[in-house]
Length: 294
Length: 296
Image 1: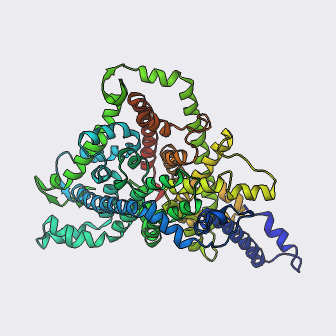
Image 2 (image 1 turned 30 degrees about the vertical axis):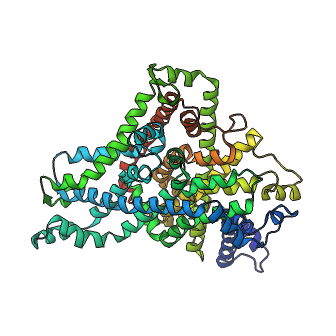
């Protein structure tokens, strides 16, 4: 891809022919420059959002704009947290994201345990039944799901945001994939030692699955934390709303938008998912690689 | 597979499967089925009366020029989002997979936007591109002397939506493409190197074909992303405007269903989107089997 570059670089070097080493160094430099440019483009929106989250309206509207930390850091974050109720929305987001992450992990672990370690009739049919739900993202059924949840009396409740997400094909197959990689000799040995299936699951499978659990945790937490459409539809009471939808309230105030506060709110809202992702990014990548092979 | 199935019990597997079974049945299968049913009805305001109308809703969707525009918008948006996020993702993965210092750092710095929500990305870009105090227009006016109306020009509004969607999604593709590149059989690449193939030839003749299954997988995942995650971008940035120029199918389903209370029409559009997802998933599952020799 970077073919012409090494030659132009090396033509400035002494000697009749460029050495392999100098050619390599030049192409590495080019790769670094391209990657650094990409890293900057990816990071710039977030850096700008952070800088302006510290500025007063006067500083934001000043011309030319100032790309330095302003004087309203504490004030903007406080206002977003208390006056625009971001604290409350954050609490709601934490409750549903943690409930689904924990719940889905347990439910998926149990289902995979049955699918891998048990012989029972209709197993193939159950497998297909779970597999087919890969084709049913919540978004395509929002109209009918809303009617169902309303009939159940769950409008404006955490249940509407949690219960429909407690099981998934992705979660089940992630654990199934992991269990299938564990040598069969382990379960045979456990059986010979007289360990029943639950004992085997608890003392052998569970400790051997911590990596998958971590992968599940990060994928599910990020997914739930970032949900927007479904909470927007089903939650009409502010006290139960999640932070992603709460952000919308910051941008559509009565007065001219105070972008400093909006950006402060945005930074607050993105931090938990970003932190979880950064802490568990190794497990996340491995989990992703597994989720690709059904 | 069944070599692992060492245990036998009449009831335990069913108990273990019960939560998954019940939740998938009640909250995925039933609403999907209900969506088909609702698409055959016209529901009066607030669901007070429900009238069977057969395929009338579909007829309206396929004949009305407003819906034709929505389908067209969705196709344009999805095409560019998929193409650009995959092409940029692959290019950056090839770069970040070179034997250079700081590979791990580059990889992480390219993939983190995966953890951002579409809503957060939407709000940040609304600020960057707004016409009074937006940084983008400040930079453009200083350097090029222009100050485009991003949200009121139909073409620019669509371009902005595509840009933010690509910005957020490139990292997802980098995760998979780097994993794919690292799993490539080293012998083949070395043989090509010895044969004197240029990097350009090596990439197009060997690396890219070997990444084929990964590319198909990502093609489908990116298309599904473009169909659904687009909602927050549209809702926060353009609201479908100006005059429907950026109204996408998922956004219109929400509008018809929850702002205009045309439940039947919204359900019919959902069915159309569902069919698209089913076709894509079948392609993906079929390719998944042919992946056995790929060794991932």
